[in-house]
Image 1 (tube, rainbow, N blue to C red):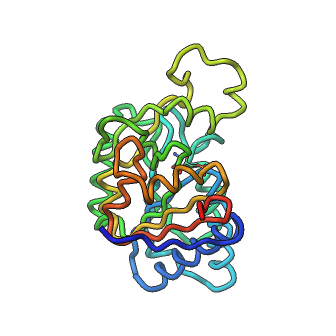
Image 2: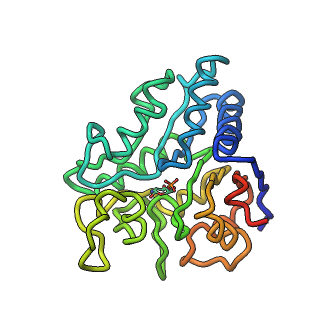
Length: 250
Ligand code: GLP
C-alpha cells in the first residue's frame, strides 16, 4: 500500500484542468495509451480542457484507445441521457480520436452477459487500461460498483443504488419512489468491474464539491471495505487524487 498523491485545486474548474493536464501528458508520452474514462458532472471541466489542449497545443488522439467506465442498459448513443451521447458532446466530437477506438458498453445489447464479456475482451485486447480517470459517487461508488457486501471484478450489469439514481436523475426523482429499488428507466447499467479498474496501471480520482468531502476522506483514510468501493483504491500503488477545496477534508 502506498499513500496516494493528493492535489487540491481552488475550484472544480481548476481540478478539472489539473486532471486534464495529467491525461494530456500521458497521451503525449505513451503512444497507443489506453484510457479509462468517467462521466458525470465532475469531469466536464476536464473534458473542456482536453479539447482546448487538442485545439491549441495539437495533442494527437489518433493512437489513443478509450474505454468508458459505464453505460445505462436500454439506451443507445443517440439517447441524450446515455453516456455515449455525453462522451460525444464532451470529447469525441472535438478531438481526432478515430471512432473505432472509442469504446463504451452497448446499452442496447440483446445479450447483456455476452456484451459484458465482449467489453472485457476488448479491454484485454487493447493491452489493459494504462490510465483510468475515475469519479466517485457520494456513496463511494466507482463506475456503478455500488456499496455492497461483495463486489464484482469484471464488467457486469449493476443495479443503481436508489441514492445514485436520485442524484443522477433529479428531475425524474421529483416524484416519490415506492420502493427501495430505482424505477425503470435507468435502473440498471453496465459497469467495468472493480478488478479491471484496480488493474489500471495508473489511476486519477477526480472529486469536486462539498457533497464528496466525507466519502473522499473515508475512501482515503478509512477502512478498506466494499461498503465504500473507492476505499479499495488504497490497495493500488499509483493513484493521484485531484480535489477542489470543497471536496478536500483538510
Ligand atoms: C455516476 C457515474 C460515476 C460517476 C459518479 C459521480 O453515477 N456512474 O462513474 O463517477 O456518478 O458523478 P458526479 O460527478 O456527477 O457526481
